[in-house]
Length: 420
Image: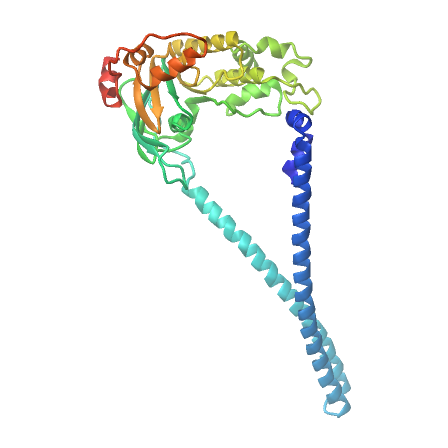
């Protein structure tokens, strides 16, 4: 119910509330939920009233019996008056104590149920907790090598990834492409250490050949080596400066670096042009609050990942809200980051952006269907060629047919590594 009220009052939902008349649905939902809650409260109140009535009746009969027995003993001379008075006081005190005992037992039962749920949640959290320590990563890290990895989400019966092998090197752009649900985002989460593989291994390799598997690695160092720019990254209800600095929340804010990251992401001039500059809260509804467009938010997210300055950057659809010219500039900036030694993993459906990638992996139903450079994949024909041809056809561009040469496959990955 609180969520429904929040949607009715938050500015980001104002368009659909007015144009789609969503407020009517939300208010109906609020009324239905309120009605169900009131009906349940009435049912519980009736049940409690019946229980209290029955308990009160038995208690009254028991008290009547006790007092009747005392009266008979007093009138028959079998019990002195002083003793009878003492018995009455004792009965009343015992009744009050017994009532308190029953209430405490009932409260203890309710808290035991909550305690049981808390213990179960704690045990589950401990089972999946990220280790506080682990083997240090090689310094410097040269590559992330994924070998025959499979992954099944909890509660699922099908694998999201099946025997996937991928190598991501620093100083290169590695593109992951494929249809929705092919496993691209899951693979990115495995690369970042957010998920551990169900089978297979993820190795972090150093410049001198030393390697550490992610299960044994110090996960804090793994996270410290990764920058994320997801399609649905958080829009923090904070200042513009804080929204960039949150990219490295484990270190004090460095405003010169914040401004440099914003300029590199082409959002610095926009922020400085706001009425309150870097202290502007980039969310409507607050004092000094401003509303940013989707494209401006994507630039702000880009600045956040640049401020992190991690050896590897995982980018998931970073330009979906940008205009064509800005999109081209954004991909050129990502390419420049790779040129400066960052390993960029690019997940995108804009296949024109993958043409300059150093290596492209095409996922299909959780497997690596084909991989290679853009020219190799376009020459060989296959999924990538078909997807690229379909996008080009939208603009009336006719592509030459593929030569039918086989693209490098997953089993050629080791040879591919030696060649590179």
